[in-house]
Length: 501
Image (cartoon, rainbow, N blue to C red; front, side):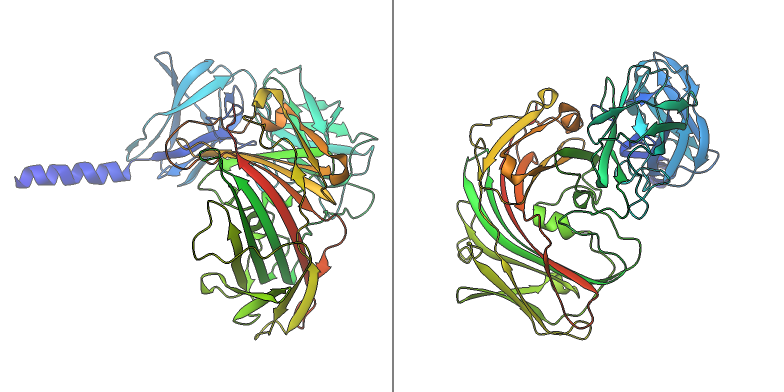
């Protein structure tokens, strides 16, 4: 018995010591698109990244397909991340990846190998956000200027187009495999903004990165970039949500306010990277990643206001038409305040307060604390509008694009399409901006291509489509002693759960 117990213990120790590839853990090094999504295949000659545990120590990466195995060229190997390059002669089709280290061999990880599947490098290495280039928000590219981008996975691809703010451009290409360099001239009619979307149009949709374009410092849009210093963001929102399982229509009012000391440069959240009016951007991640969209748009818009929270008092007070609501510290964390202001409909709890953010003026008051002095400001509650085809839209066909209609929306309309695969945890999001007065917007199919398709499984679904109205003019400033910059925003959101096909 002692021998058997010792043997079992040895097996358990060896199993714990073996390398492991994490879920969605083999990706194009530039795009970072999860392998189960449409753009997640690995191209011949492409740089790839492997995420996992215990990956370092005389590391060897092997590709197996059709009974044959070949080694991958290693670029670097650390305990939780490997950088490598797919052989240009790798067999096309279904294959598997294993990692071998001193302590053993990982379980095989399934992938698809294709001749070409482009990815563009982003500055943060996560496949979204500002592109790896010489330009930045502080140094935008001008129309007509020559710009350099970097990518991988292009293989021998010839029939592809680089789209810059929805405009096709001609490229000069250098290099045949691995990390490639591309040069192009910014179109004379390109959209201007801090986060102009850039992607490759080919057989598969690439990831989307952004490029700052403008003559001088660019304007980030109604949601400002908060630079170093003491900052505050207040967002009051009303959300109307239709659940496709019971077809109920629920409404909720909430507030999220943060006071924080930030370091430069600004921390970027995907939903803060609003593209220019009339364009869309997209990004992918895994549900475990902090780039995945939170349950509410209001939470997503300020979830990345990070660093040390500032004391603005024990709670804030919101008032409207003689009613008041306490906005308290979120889980007692210094500087972060949140409140469910009111609810109505099937999802409302019995003890929930009545709806609070009807049209009119809201006053937010803070008594002040150790870091932030007292303040009072008034701003308009979210302005209602109507999404005309919400109830008749039964599914989103990703390969056909999507057109939506609305009426009565002031300022800008922000469209967010998002889904998470419950089995693989791969997530995808599309983000578009339109003029509220336009009343209609069409989402290109390339922007929807890397959203997971919906599975008809029991339990919670994550497939959502939102339209939000946000004032285009300058947001209401928050002014208080100890505060360098602060803004108050109001957001009205109409959403529904909808399958992606």
